Length: 179
Image (tube, rainbow, N blue to C red; front, side, top):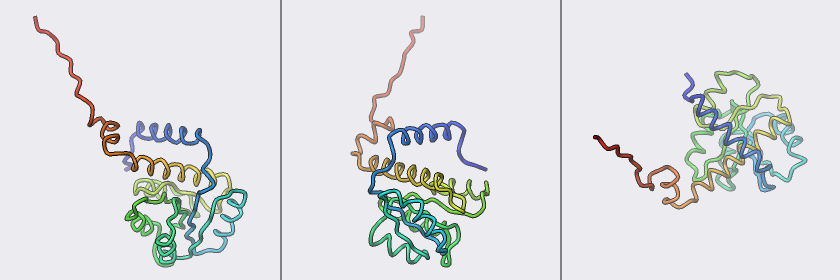
């Protein structure tokens, strides 16, 4: 069963819309592609060629972890299966990082079950292969904006977080007189 309510989905859609309205990501966007197939890398290079974004490529989980240790990427596009693991392993490993990248899972099949599993596990989204340029560009843009927003929120002082979550505000109560 999916763990999100309709109101949570509406909130997410509203936040996503606000992020889109703020514009597309800065040229500093870095994407790490993890895929055993050269055709995925070729397609991503073609899709991102009109941007100033940088694309790092890895064929295995081990290679990707080495690249992330050297130079973290805010967005990862990962094939759902890898020679030495899967997207779940990538998510587990990147969850240990101080600024966890947004993980987009690539699958050849648009399976609802996989999509729900991806979202429920904390990955950002699922994209279907073969890649459609507008879908990939939109999802990477939104993932990067989401990563940037989370990073800003984590950088706020603890007091700001407490107030935003309602813990720093005085309680408001009303008293009614009984006659």
